[in-house]
Image (cartoon, rainbow, N blue to C red; front, side, top):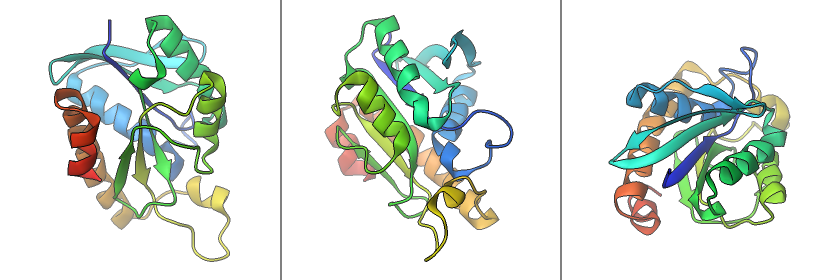
Length: 187
C-alpha cells in the first residue's frame, strides 16, 4: 500500500512533450528514471508505477488525459488505493512562479490552473498537497495558453532541469521528514 501517490500533470503525446505545461510530467519521468520504474497503463486515464522512494512505498503517475481533465486520474488513483486526498501530491507547472523556482503547499485553491481545478472538482476538496514548478510568465500581451503550450528556451530548460532535481529532493524530504520541513527547506 503506497504512503503517497505522486501525480504529475501535463498533456499526453509528442506534440506537447517539451511544452511548459508538461513540467509535472518531467518530474514524474525523472523520478521513474531515478527509481528504475516504467510507467504502465493501469486505467484508461492513468499511467503509473509503484516503487520505493526514501524507504517509502509510493506510486508515481501521469494522467493519459489532457491537463483540464486531470481530476479523472486523481480520483481513480485515490479510489484504487483507498487513500485520502492528503496522500496525493500533485506536481504541475505554474506561470505565477519564476522559471526554476518551486513552491510546495499543503492545500489551496486552483490559482487559475485548470488541471488543479479539475482535481479539486473531482475530489471535492482543496486539501491535497501540491508542488508547483515555476515556468515563468508570458510577456506583456502574450497569450497565456500559447505560452504554457510553448517550448522553453535552452536557458529555461537548463534552469528547469535544476528545478526538477530540487523537486525530487523536496519530495524525498516530504517523505522522510514532513511537509512543513520540506516547505521550509525548498520554498
